[in-house]
Length: 119
Length: 163
Image (cartoon, rainbow over all chains, first blue to last red; front, side, top):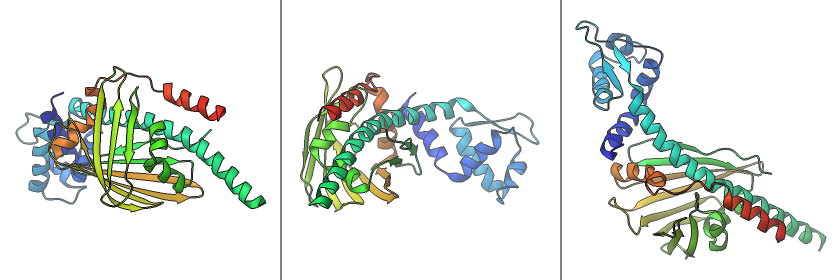
């Protein structure tokens, strides 16, 4: 995935309201009015967020001129989470090595303390 | 065996990555593992990447320098300067890769909180630009490194029984 596309996706996801909108759309499509309600936001404010999400390809809008329902588009979201998951797995592997090392350091630390206690 | 947590990675803003992980050890040991070259060499890196050179001048304004070697023999260098050193709970330093393809220094703030002998580490990695952050997220994959996840964990457990 091109990094500029990823940039747009991550920027769109950085806002908590936009993430909440995506979470709502994960349960099914909704109109701007339906989306504005639970967020206590004006329709223009919601529309602004929707434009960012639409530009990032994270949502699409229906053709119905009146309602124009919003729908979650999973593909860019999956690409973004795949990148994050890959990064996470790399560091998780490194930290598992750190777990092993810390177990060893703890054992040595306890031995030191016992030695101090007995002296 | 440790019953430690798994790593959580979040992107709270355009330029940040936050890593959170629980370790089943007191924080002075985690702090030591983050700052002592002989310890860093034993865990830093994954997928066949190992630290072959590790220099730490643990003073405010002091420099650090890591060179990692990959499974295909490729070397990757990174360096930076320590900004805050407050053992055992806080470490702040800058980071730049030798072959960095994005602008600016990265600022890493690591905070260790201990509770009942376990330590929660929170590392906030702040990139100079959003572009930098997103490139870094792609690094482990872009470098095409292997999958030898457990190779070094095995080596370490062998070493620890031997010592």
